Length: 351
Image: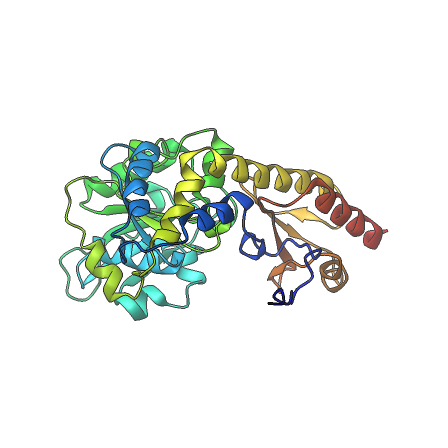
């Protein structure tokens, strides 16, 4: 049999998204190892069983994982499990669940999102308080949950104390706290904290833990941090079309990511490459870095007319064409040479 045709240029590199990178070699090995033979479907397999032990070790005793296919699906199910049909969810206006999931929370789960403006993508008890009102009114969705994105859609990271303050506010007002952790690993790496210290220890109730942005082929996990609570995750996962029949291949990837420090080394490397990129362009004429670099993303404003030429050197997103703000995202496989080549290209264009 002839080998499959390769339809892409494996030498093409860019800063468009960590979703655009390939799969970490150790993750591919885990998938291959999980292949062959027959095991139970829909999570009735030894890999999903082992994953529960790994999740409890990383997130705390009593934490339980529900593997899903996509991050959007994980967010929808997690939020759906936390509120009644008439409830609403407070979020940052720039939160991924509000800006980049095409209304999935609204259309799939019927959830009313209440976005809150924030310059750095982060919420605070003070900002949340301004939208926390009118409980019991039939005219306004009751604010019964809060979701924060860690790291945020703008690349900034919540400290443990900041999350704890939000959790305290939420619980004192009978609200739950969900963390959209698509890049939770990057935030933990930046802060030098464990996943447990950024979730269970600070009072979060539920986490959508991301794998695809940190070297997985596919798959994420909803992590319940409140032992003994009845969330209905299993039923919602099926009803929302996120129950994978061959779940062993999601679980095997998450085990490989979390059982060792692969999650941390990959995220730390991506963060380091983003910092290298930021330092490389800082001070260049007409280039303004707009957010603190606290994960694997750099946000910057470029001079007029630069974007088409620079994106031809290495692809990236024009975040806001009206302000000329762009986003550069680094991945587990971004190299120093990738960064230095890009920085040199920008310098040449500006010259």
